[in-house]
Length: 432
Image (cartoon, rainbow, N blue to C red; front, side, top):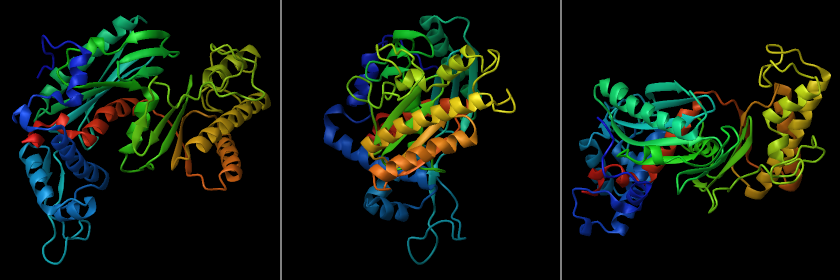
């Protein structure tokens, strides 16, 4: 089940496929760009509804998506024949909506394990890869520690690990799923179009070709920053959906942000849309930023910055992680609590500025902010500021932890999102 294809080794080949270049059973001259866009819109609406709402009957799909019954029937027939969707037994217990009087509808859902999207996350010390089916359930996972910090060595290892998971781990499953694509994320600033890492403070890398080691994979490989992948994942979280316009903030060794506008990720021409690292911090720690200014948010409010400051002032033992829970990893002191309160204020003001600019439905802050009181302090500052500037009309502002397992799922969401919006690029049967 290898995905390597000789003679097709450029990123340009993969990018061309997204512009409409997949070979398919239909003669190329018969599939116009308008036909493809129309099919993507209709099939995508069905798939998105099924993912977010669960098993749904055909008549209900037509009513809730606005598509004609004929279109729904044609598309769902294609998808069931290709094994993408399957019919479930009707449940006449009120859990499946009826289209009208008579027998309950036979609900459609994604077939279990027939398709897979892979998420690859390259972190500081290791690379992890996980395959998920289209119900977003993990199928197989693999991990490899980094033997060095060389970008080329780490990325070649990541490609080998991914190929091993496909050939060995997924190959043992019955049925063996069709891999739709691979999503790769790293911390830092990533140029999505070129598949390159501009810079990563976490990894210490600059101007790295992320796509090169994956260029021979015979499926699309989508590459972006970790925080943007995390933002995309939230779009397709059926258990806790976000709004159409969302701000995602990630606080760890860095402070990063991503913007979703009308359910589409905003990247910008220079790969820097949503970058809040250089927002000014009032009454900061006096730290110099690489941009030449003092007390930018990214070098002042990160967990790394607070750890270094606390250690330098003798407030924290160097052997203790800043992210350790108070009472578990260290004993809290008034000085440490005061430092965390200051950071909550810096973050609160910066996030409030971003909310005022974007006016999102939902703002989600991921990462370690300190104690529950520190989190509440940050959220209260945001709420008070926006109550004054937005007349209290701001959307939801939430804080969530970021467990290690979330990053592979976020990486895989890069492919899932593209598949749900442009399914003909991944399923050739939809063009017949």
